[in-house]
Amino acid sequence: MTAQNKSYDVVIVGGGMYGASVSWWLSQTPGFSGRILVVERDPTYENAATSHTNSCMRQQFSNPVNIAISRFCAEFVRNFRDYMGGDPDVPELAMHCFGYLYLADTPAFAETLQESQNIQAGLGAATQFMTRDEIAAAWPFYQLDDIVGGNYNAVDEGYFDGGTMFDWFRRMGARNGVEYIHDEVVSLQKNAGRIDSVTLKSGAVISCGVLVNAAGTRGVRVAEMAGIQVPVEPRKRYTYIFDAAEPLEKDLPLTIDPSGVHFRTDGRYYMAGGHADEDPAVDQDDFVADHGLWEEKFWPIIATRVPAFERVRVINMWVGHYDFNTLDQNAIVGASPEVSNFMFLNGFSGHGLQQAPALGRGLAELITNGAYSSIDLSAFGAGRILAGEKFLEKAVI
Image (cartoon, rainbow, N blue to C red; front, side, top):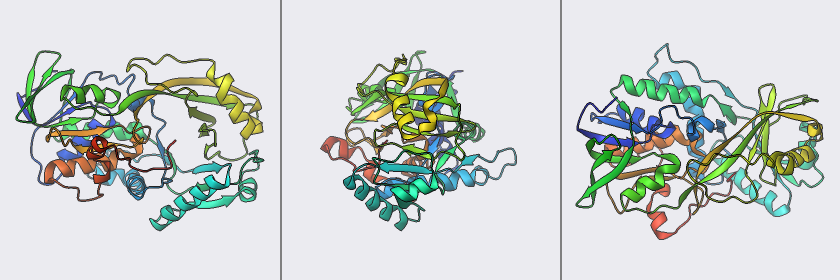
């Protein structure tokens, strides 16, 4: 399918979760009546982060903006049909709130968790700090000899049906006039410090008013086409689905072990994730798995923390990519200081799915009105990248 027009008010590079979110929000934002084109290089989304996501949701961040973003995601998921206009064809989104449990193995880490708990509670989150004895009483299956305490929240924390959210962002956007095409942006043409047009692999040249970079791990290449450097690179992340010979008597919270490995209930099975000890940048097309990692790293950590997991069987695994922001592992959102009509939605570093409703809405507000009107996302601005100033977030997985 080719573009129906030669000029669009907004051209979005990348049709994954973020391209779908911002295009849908724009299509129904009061005051915006322009044409929107979404260019996606692989409409199967086979290797997109959207397809490899674990669909997790948490409010346990240390920065108030990240907490507000996740609280909006929970509201959006709970009221999904209403946000989609009340259409009875829109399904309710499933949300499984078994909670996150951050485990601390040092007094200093426990103090950091308590500081974050105070911030989260002040913003309405239900996070509580628990002592080792309280954790042991609640979940007797943990081995906690090295643990000092932990933070736990079972309200609006767990995982949700991100695939259905993505599907309906695209469906409703298309109903509102958003165009999706299967093509690839190969170059950007600048004029007077702005993006004037994009050239597609098919040879088409499309004029644009605003260019949105929502290209995931390929976002760095799109930025380079505009002469912009961003500290984003693909990093491999492993996910394992496993069965246990001795299933636990209750749901396993999404447990963040001090080692960095995390694991949780996944229906009748369990899910674990993390990365290799060496975590280099990789090629955007490199999804080759290190099949020794489960035996060498993941299973020993999991079985030590939960002795019942001594006898488990991996039934599925996959490798996905984080679009990893090497500066501070947080999103880059908003207009470039160098190219004014170039908009970033990049560098989510694993937070992306749960942040898509709020950040898509925020960028739609910025494009339409020149400012954020719901959650102030200016802290994610690209100016901090140029200045080398980090957005401080202590709760990065």
